[in-house]
Image (cartoon, rainbow over all chains, first blue to last red; front, top):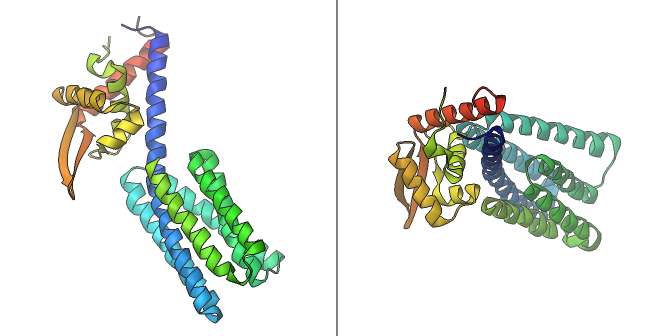
Length: 183
Length: 99
């Protein structure tokens, strides 16, 4: 028989493993969503660069496909793995962030196309960074890395900003998602 | 008085069962992922999974994904029950209900 100190240590060990498994499940689902958004925004920036007058329509399609895809991945991957409630809370938080972003960029501020192009990616990366405080450092690394590259592009990429964003924003999300799957 | 399960109580086997038990029923973990989550080595993990499988606590499924062999380990109903009883016993010891 063991004493209460050893029993506490065993339970603590169990809790540690449970935490790791849950974090791993979150990473598996989140990485798929991040990779999907990486591909979508890459296509969006290239399409926006190629057909500039259709910018709003292009980004509306990208956002709708992305949101539908995120819900699909979270529902398919999350519910089956017992993380459905988490996915729904995360989605609600994401939608609140989007609403706040629209309020800031359209209602309060009157951002031009270049500012809008940079505001949304940086704003969504803030969401990733905050998520990282609870769910793991991988989110924070992806967010800070992407934000730094986006801000550099804003000041130095000139007329090639859309191409820069395709490479650094889309690319960072895809690479970040792939990296997250290896953790 | 409940007894500690000697098969599960070994530290690495306890970690293996904890990892598998948190998953939904009939959902398993790949060997490589289980290794990472429990911090075990290949040989060590294989030996302890074998012990748990002999006790009927886990099921081991070996399949090929493409050309790569993939081993998936899943907690059985008996394993989940034994793990639950083991955790309850640990909690009783902490609460002072057991010597």
